Amino acid sequence: MPNTPDWSAIRKDFPILDQDVHGKRLIYFDNAATSQKPRAVIDALSRYYERDNANVHRGIHELSQRATEGYEGARERTAKFINAPKSCEIIFTRGTTEGINLVANSWGGANLKSGDVILLTEMEHHSNIVPWQLLAQRTGAKLRYVSVTGDDGLLDLSQLDPLMRPDVKLFAFNQVSNTLGTVNPAKELCAKARALGITTLVDAAQSIGHMPVDVQDIGCDFLVFSGHKMCGPTGIGVLWGREELLEKMPPWQGGGDMISSVDFFESRWNTLPHKFEAGTPDISGPIALHAAMDYLDAIGRDKIFAHDQELAAYAYNRLKEIPHLRTFGPASGRSGLVSFVLPEVHAHDVVTLADHRGLALRGGHHCNQPLMRKLKVNSTARASFYFYNTMDEIDRMIEILAEIQQYFSRGS
Ligand code: 7TS
Image (cartoon, rainbow, N blue to C red; front, top):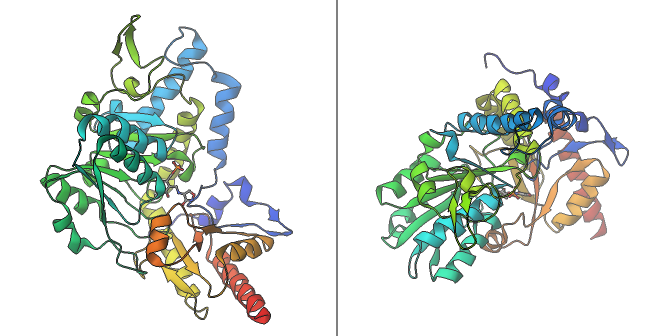
């Protein structure tokens, strides 16, 4: 590939990776849970607290102006990052989960009534299921699901037309599954929904730091993501919504900053985006997220995606060398993660023994309990990659898994 990034030089930007765990070189394969942070992001956080810290939108003094410029500058940067038409459509949240809860409470409360249907998929994270269940309980709306085909982890698109009946008001789905590694055809799904007047929400938690994400190209109505999975800090996330929808939505939380005037018995709301940002926000979070966006774009998100896919395809093929190991998700075109089950070994045992060898995997239901039931497993082990991971680390994982399998087969 022309202009291939120097991945081993890039890896050196992540100080945390240069350490031993349990006396072994750390291999960090838990990036779907949270990514590591490059020096540029860590520096942006400490620079803010060392030089500029003050509250935003309320001070005339120099530090408050700097903090406000940093905070609002991050909003403009975020709009560019996802190609949002306007920066007032960017609402800062605590993360993906809070973004979905905001839409469920505000848009959902105002637009759904008894008998309406919220369409989800069987591969959603709990954070894209439970807020809709709560909304359904409050409004009498119902949930409906697009099936997953099986271990190959694709959405059964043949069901879409029959499922998108006129009672469907919202279709919410992830762009990339955190357990299966499936990349869903977000643009195609949104086009179908849009043609039927169905509002769409895209959960971009697993895609945002791994591929170019363009809300206008996808054609969704809402898109949510978390900063911490894309080299940013924890505690900051983004909800993007179309201006005309956000304008009509009532506030979700009340407090300072979200009002234009307050009287003892009634108040008027501030303009977008402030209507949805009650109270003192996380200020350092957006500023560090800005640094993360600059960092990712300097590498190139298309290059990150290609590299992720290479790592995942290599890992998937090497995992297949282990006898009887069961993998989940598509054989090709997957994003940078692989879930698997070693026969007769509980995922938590795999993860614990891997940890003793310096390898950080994740084991469990990955906040996908309904999907686990569908796949008839309690849990899986998951290796999730990012651009700083290497093929050598994957080779070492395969050696470790072979050792673990041998350890358990000796005992039986
Ligand atoms: N949606 C998807 C697809 C996710 O993978 C996650 C987190 C969330 C939503 C929630 O994000 P949050 O930042 O608000 O918590 N996924 C995972 C995971 O796979 N392991 O740990 C967290």
